[in-house]
Image 1 (cartoon, one colour):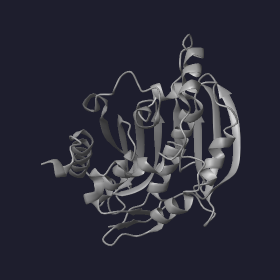
Image 2 (cartoon, helix red, strand yellow):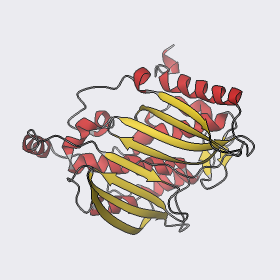
Image 3 (spheres, rainbow, N blue to C red):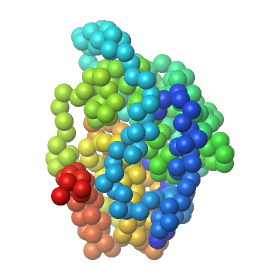
Length: 293
């Protein structure tokens, strides 16, 4: 079962500790019976029976020191009269053929993000270029990253998810008010979101024809740790190739776009329905552990 993948958009942030070796080893190991996904992303996925273990990736980020309560309360009090902007993190694999492009926006509240870049270096990554631009939505911090060991863009979905969690965790650490706007605030933040997204209401799945050789899959759902990896696994489980895409974290929601194909052809209608039903079942099913039955 082979799969190709190329583009995602999301970001997250782990701590400044030295866990990068463990993370990289975990992402490079091949589990017997796993799937090697070929293409712009050479994704190494683990057995699909592990899909219910959703907290594995989130544990990578839990070593980051959280902001102190005093800092959180001080920042919260300073921003009570302000409208807290929606944090947006994008991981883009399409724009640059040789690097993974990460874009982070949180209104005008973000600085130079040197701490974020240092934390990414601790994951075994190089920041090869960075720039900042302004528009009506705020300050956009954009930088390109590559793996230290290969000099190439990040192709492992587990490492991409670790990047996403790293950036988000770091944002929450230095801007505690952002946790109230992020689904990850439940796991990492001091100020948790006031409202929880109903996954049944938030989940939307659409598939469009995008030429004779591929289809465009769009997924929008409630965000949570490990979601990026889980989406790739459920798609590849039914032998569909993920050629490229983008994964965005926008506040409480995650939005993914994947160019997909089956044997280098666009998905026919019956296969589109199978893919849609599989994703909808997986995203909406109860999270009760199997061991509880």
